Image 1 (spheres, each protein chain N blue to C red):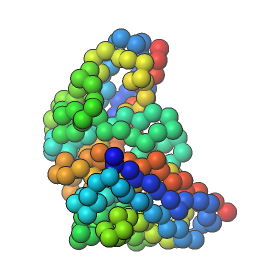
Image 2 (spheres, chains in turn red, green):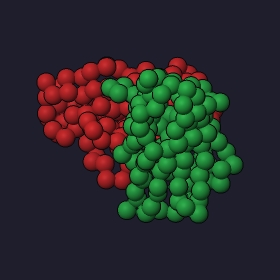
Image 3 (cartoon, rainbow over the protein chains, first blue to last red):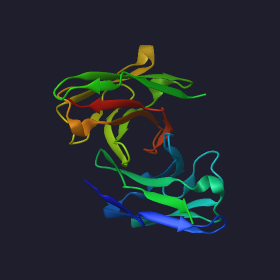
Length: 108
Length: 119
């Protein structure tokens, strides 16, 4: 089973700043199946990025994904107040789906 | 509009059973694989189980294998999760999620149903 480790656990930034969130896999991940979600308190997760770098419909272009192999990154270019939330990466491989433990993005 | 509405959660004693349901609407249900994903209180997301559009391909996380059974009724646009031999560590909000075609991501989620396993 592929283990995804997200860092940092918590990221404290100000609105307008740039956020860089990391997702590292215990073994190589097919980039087609590396996904990012956003979750706000009391809400279900929301799909942000699929295929490591493709934005889901309706997702603003300040969100971007990159990476390959075992290292993937979610970047938010200029934080808006509504972006403060928890972010999870997810992968599919060998008929299993696994999630990272999440990064909490909080207002500084 | 895609809607996924879970039901069937509640308080149950360890060792007992519970059946969750998910009613789907707003899309062609029998075109898509469906999943159950859970989230323990204050914790991260854990994939539980998946079922292909025709029930021909089913998968489970090791943590539930042999205790949980996923099924679907395409005529009723419904997804189910039969949970047996429940343990306190199964306590979580259980989400029903739709998988997008090919990309292995979950593009729509329900609001979840809470399962609490406690004596």
